Image 1 (tube, one colour):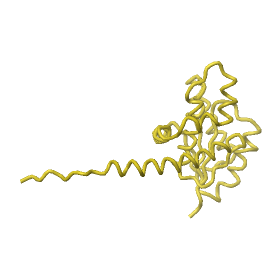
Image 2 (tube, one colour):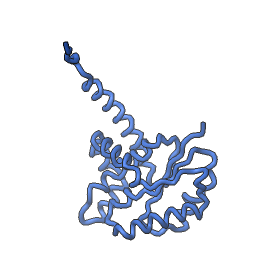
Image 3 (cartoon, helix red, strand yellow):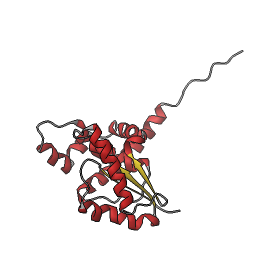
Image 4 (cartoon, helix red, strand yellow):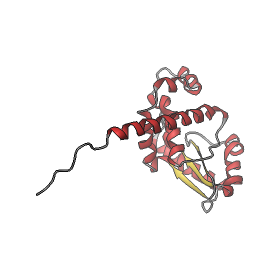
Amino acid sequence: MKARIFSGVQPSGNLHIGNYLGALKNWAEIQGNYESIFGIVDLHAITVYQNPEELRAKIRETAALFLAAGIDPKQSSIMVQSSVPEHAELAWMLTCVTPVGWLERMTQYKAKAQEQETVGDGLLQYPVLMAADIMLYQAAIVPVGDDQAQHLELTRDVAQRSIRYMARRSRCLRPTCRPLDRA
C-alpha cells in the first residue's frame, strides 16, 4: 500500500511561477508514487474577505491549473475543501482542544496580525484547519513551504492532545446504568 500524500493551494490569488515550481510541478512528478490527494483549500482563503463570485471563479481556475500542470485525476484525487464538510467539522472539534496560547505563538499569525487593523479569528484558527485537513486524510507526507513548517509541528501537537482528550472524555461518557427491564 502506498503512503498517502496531501497538500493544497489556496484559490485566493493568481497562481504564479513560484506555485508551479514549488508545488504543482513537484506534485505532478511524484503523484504516481503515493496515494495523492491535492486540495483547493478555499476555507483557508476566507481568513480574509473574498468576493464570493471571484472565489468561485478562482476555484475553477485553480482546478484547471492543477490539470494543466500535470495532476492526473486517474492517479490523484483533487478536492475542493469546502465541498467536504468534514474539514470544518473536524476543525471545530480540534479548535475545542487547542490552547489559544499555542496559536498565538505561530509566527505567521503574529506577522499577519501586525499588518491588519483588526484580526478575525479565522487567521488565528488557520493552523487548526490545516491540522484538520491533514488528520482527516491521515496523510503520511505533507509537502509545504517553509512558512507552513511551524503549522506541521502544531498539527502533531494538536493530534496528540486531541487523542488524549478524546480518550479521557470517552471514559466519562460510558453508561453506568443498566437498561430498564421490561416485564
